[in-house]
Length: 145
Image 1 (cartoon, rainbow, N blue to C red):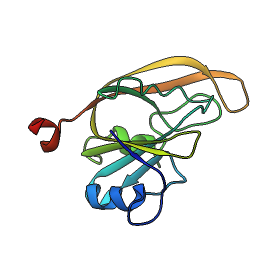
Image 2 (cartoon, rainbow, N blue to C red; image 1 turned 180 degrees about the vertical axis):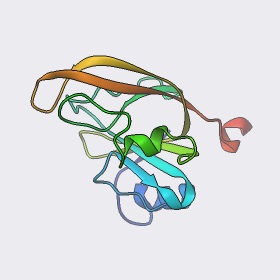
Image 3 (cartoon, rainbow, N blue to C red; image 1 turned 90 degrees about the vertical axis):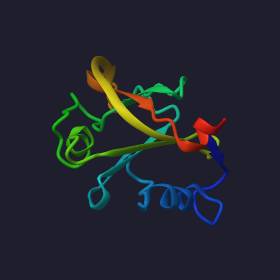
């Protein structure tokens, strides 16, 4: 895990993500699929009440699929389907934005499962959400320590 104080600039998270993944991240979207290199970058935003991400154990996280209103659809074509399709997404990375405008880079993950549960949507109506369970991949740097 690595903390960044800003998004842009030489020491910002955006530059780091580009170096780490080979992709330009898009900070306005929670699930950023990059077809050209089979990569999806996930963003979690702290205290987003209509999602139920759980990043307390950085080695085993739960991430809510895309969909703010109504039941979520794992086959939604722009975000969820590419993320869940192992022929499209071969690399998954995760970062979060905190309420105090810091960014936390969690690293590379792989999907180990998914569950559904009842949770409120952006309009406070109860709906079905889909949580993917991610396990952190060990990097060369982590193996050295």
